[in-house]
Each structure stands twice: as structure tokens, then as C-alpha cells.
Amino acid sequence: MAAQCPECEANVEVQGLMVGEITFCPDCNAELEVINVEQPEVALAPEVEEDWGE
Image 1 (cartoon, helix red, strand yellow):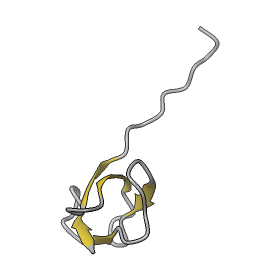
Image 2: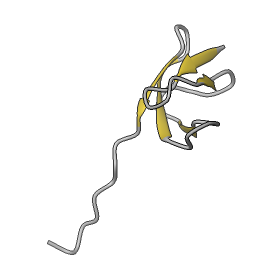
Image 3: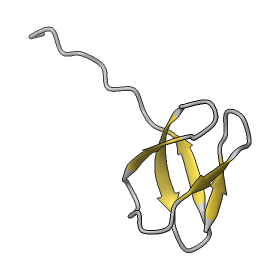
Image 4: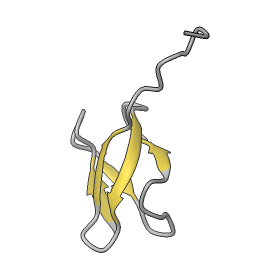
């Protein structure tokens, strides 16, 4: 089962992954979050903002 990368439209394998897991696009190396595994779908992973103790 493969989803389509939202950045470059390459096929990204999601078989064996769980919803919420992070994977990388094999073509453009974008960091992707698995959104759905039954109907394969990935989205760009949210960037973690640094907390400078504020």
C-alpha cells in the first residue's frame, strides 16, 4: 500500500506503519506523518517549534 507524497507526488510505502507515525519520502526526503493506513494517506509532518523556556 502506498500513499502519494504531498511535496513531489512520489509513492510512499505505508504498509506496516500506524496512524501518527513519521516516515520520509524516498524521493524528496520530506518528513511525512501517516494520516490513514486503510486508504493510504500522508501529510507533511508538523514542525516542532522549540520552547526556549518561555
